[in-house]
Image (cartoon, rainbow, N blue to C red; front, side):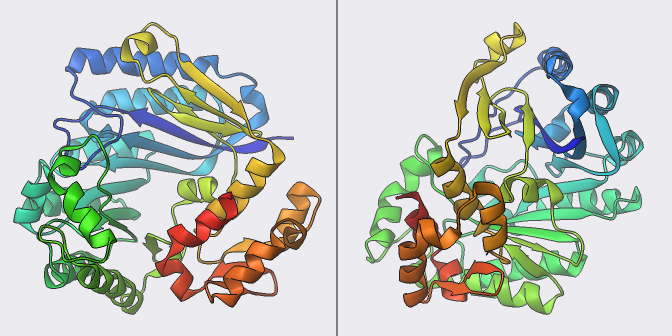
Length: 382
């Protein structure tokens, strides 16, 4: 019997690294990119027991996957089809930076079987884009978006980011309104994370600590402004026909990102490419982050078999990110014990704090629980 599988393909190349980014990404010449793609194809061919899997989703992430030449992208997809049984209606997504695609490249994507485009806009404001270190303008984004529509793409996501230095609730509202007017099928709305090791951390870490301590900050939006951006996102997108299906993700009916649902529902996924993660039959693995080693065909770096406790924690930690919550019957089906027998004390505490709601099928975060989701989810990791 075939089991379903999601496939993630990591393309680490960027024209320039954004100032907030701590992902595994860097600049590389075209020849290096081509050799890297060949190594990825080799890694795909080496994957064991391919006959037992049916691929339901493929996701090109990065980095900036759209930097790579279109024929290289098509080559990877063709390799996957040669090696795996790929579902006819599989969701095939690629992340694109505005300005790195044109009509010809997008048409090639469509011909190769890509059916979902994800544009990293982040902001419609030029000053904010420059501050982030993005390589595009809002006009460039519009041109890329319109080219994708002209090529026939009917499933487009737009990434937005709030809580940027100097951003106001009003400027973020204007970005939201610009994007909603385009009517994409999916919108991902994230709060800026200021990560150690990035230029943004050097610039704004002190301000972040002030805000976290409830004190006045000077460079970042205030806690009150951030809260307003958060609630504007919920209200504007709801009014515009988007339903929130995960903490940071909103979709038109039927356009949830099926690949990301693979992660949140703890289904099996394989990862190919530098630093790519995988979790198959409760064995989590991660490829080397050493480009030279990867180019020599030394792909794997570490592997971990998840014990039952870790699997249970993931079931709650990932599943509660979804607005529908987690199913008690599914927990029992996977682990042979009731959810309440393992986490009863935590569940009771969170319900009493009005952070969790009990439903007929299981548990979900309350509206207030979603607002403080990091705190709630952490309770299941202790």
